[in-house]
Structures are given as structure tokens and as C-alpha cells.
Length: 131
Image (cartoon, rainbow, N blue to C red):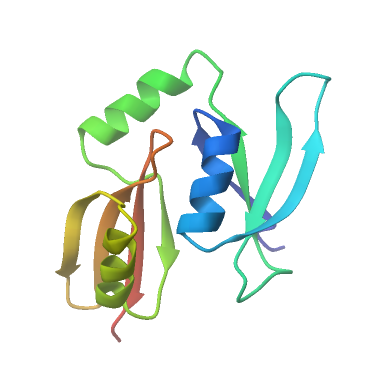
């Protein structure tokens, strides 16, 4: 068994696609229209592992999602975490692109993390293992 897909709930798939590809650097993997509406099966992957885990940019239209996401953001809880080789360097790169961080790079001993706003209603953590 292995993880094939993971999702992030987004308020606008097109905006999310731009942010996750143009700003974060992921690559679009799948873009399949669903049900004749604006909803799509939309995934991105890491350019470091294009055949690896796909991140689904999942519409957040279900009534339970918006209060859930708002509560996570209010409490400063990231929805997911992405691994990076150097949190400080990635933080600097993303800040230069206008990304807003809610937690600067912070050393927790075995891991250094930072948390940013993905512009789609989520906080996302970047993490670097130090051991």
C-alpha cells in the first residue's frame, strides 16, 4: 500500500493552480473536467518526483468545509506539510514572490518549519528535517 493522492481544499481551482504551479513550483499533472460544470479533477506533482504523490486541488464547496478551514486558520493549524531541503532559503524565495507567512522559520530541534497562507483558504507548512 502507498499514498497515491492527497488533497488540499481550495476556494478557487484556477487561482489554486496558479499559486501551486507559478509560486510554489509544482507541475500540473491532471486537469479533467467533471460533470459539465466548473469543477475539475485537478492535480499537481513535485517536479522532483513527477510520478509520485499527486496533490488534488479539491473544491471546498461542501457546507462543512468553509467553517472547518476557517477554524484551522484561526487556530494557526496548517492543513498539510511539504518537505523542503532548506526552510530558510524557501522562506526567502517565497517572501520575495509575495507569499504571506504566519510563522517564520522556527527550529524545533529535529525539524525546522515555517507556515504560509496559500491564498486559497489554507495554511501550509514547509518542513526541513535536521536529523
